[in-house]
Length: 160
Image (tube, rainbow, N blue to C red; front, side):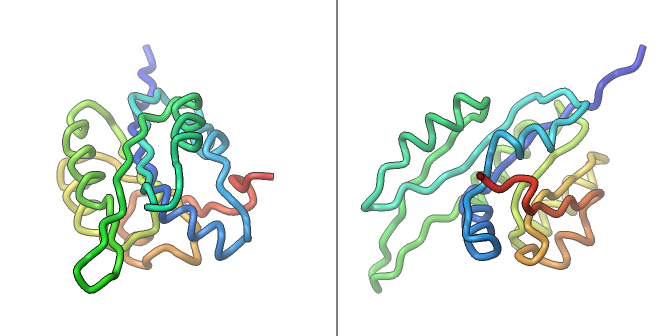
């Protein structure tokens, strides 16, 4: 009997948000994104990582993602001593990937962030597939090259 490929999805929503805003002056349709990623595959888990700005409420956004099927993780923006702000999910995403790696065939990372290149190398070293779904013009070259599959996003996932 044919076994469906299992997949876990990790969405860096900050990265996609800024890429969609810059390239399309629009927002991402996360439901379309998940359908595109999981087509003909068995979804094990889908995570969406969002940042809570000090002056905004992400609860409605988080709730809409949960309704679609994402496990939502939020992090507050931290203000440094010099006044700059920082909110980065890279380490959290990496740890969640490591936690599920032995239970899936393929890891899908929806981000163009070049900081994930070493993680992609590690995953491939464990004989797992890695796919990157991101806006091409905002995706690190090395990330595209190292992934088993790079799927450029565009109008197909823009919220209309």
